[in-house]
Amino acid sequence: MNHFFIQLIAEKKVRRQIKVLQKIYDAKFPITVDEIAEDLDISKRTLSRDIKDIEHSFPEQEVLELNTVYGYSIDHSHYVDDLIARISEESPLLLIVNGIFQEEFKSIDEWADELFISTSTLHRYLTHLKNILKEFKLELSLTPIAILGEEVNIRHFFFNFFYNMNDISTISHPTQAEYELHIKLLARYDEIRKISNSSQHRRGMYWLMVVNTRIKQGHFIKINPELKKMQKQMETYKVLAQVVESLLPFFVVDSIPEDELVYMDLLTLDIFVYLGDRDISGFHSKSEIEAVDDFLVKAFNTLGINKIEASDLRVFISYFRNQILLSKLTPLFQKNVYEVNQFIKGGHKALFYKWVDLLQNDPIKQVANIEYIEDVAVNLTIFTHCMAYNKNFKARERHILFTFDGPNAYLNYLATLIEKFNIKDVRITLLTNYHVTNELIEERKVDVVVCNYKEDSEALNCKVYKAERVPTENDWEQIRNIIFYMDELI
Image (cartoon, rainbow, N blue to C red; front, side, top):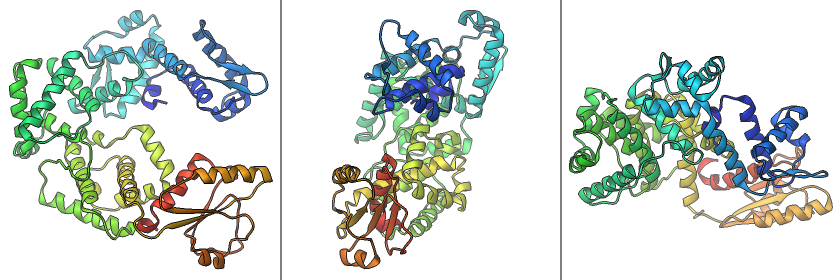
């Protein structure tokens, strides 16, 4: 579910109905009213009304299949997508934000008339928008309705808005002209540098759309003079200046100010793909470089990572150096997508919190102006996970011992799940006829014991993971993490 989109839906009822529809679709089996109501913490009466409203939204189709015994189910994902698309096309806040981006300067009364809602309802919606804008260090003016704040933060909000709405709404996608300009920029850039770029195409497209539109409207970035002076010395800046000069006829203005060129050059750090054999960065002071190096040395020692490949180290160094530069524009560049944060924090909890602690208590926090520690910790967790995964367990084969308990037929089912749980260079054993002891662990050279019951009779001399009685997807992910990080992090 698109969290950013849900935030922009001011109507609680609509947000709830989207969650209901998503809940039914995500279920791998028919789900009852009682189960939905309990999971979403709403009354069955409210839920029944929501389901009727959802069905009325698709009068030509039977979206929800109801079995009186088993519950509701949805067979096709496009029903969820269609409902979200219909809501987005009619959402007052989405239409207002797009209008502001297009510089439609209207009063509250004018917007209320256009959207066919009362001014009191619109005031309530705008209060919701104000709270979202605070996350981007921005304010909302009501006379007329407009977004106020530093240009760098305004652009960041619009980028996130359109980038996240891409799969949902038809409003304000990059134009064909902007698409062709983007292709020309990349081709000319590669031609001058004589190296293929490592950038994210789609992300770059939306940055180009936002920057191009804001420049056309006369809204320009102001760069710190010292940062501008240093960044202009970089090869990437000089190449970009050549590229823009050669393609200026395709832009919407007669000339691009130096501050805008520096800003565009720094934006390449935000769309850069981190690869072990590629790095890109700008100018850094000696103290900044030393702070990054010192932090990584301490961090790897704390995590128990004694040896790191040069390619992996380049990824960590590039990431930190790029964050230092981007944060000089705005710390908002540190922020992650909500869904990514939730996934990594849930699936790699132990490693994530180790990185949080490391960032909280090190001078790098001030040097890099780290304002969003959890977001940065998520990225560092991802890099560490990838590093461990790519090692492919060059040491001896790991042995993971599953000791599960349950009714006879259920144990047969668990045995099937375990057989499907296949990790390269890991030996898997399911043990049901022995009590697990340290003697048995030593004899069979067991590295990890996984059980689905509480066992306190003996403290085992190996890693033990307690899964749910019915192991969840998160359990399987946690077990993989234990294996991946055994040498590096335990």
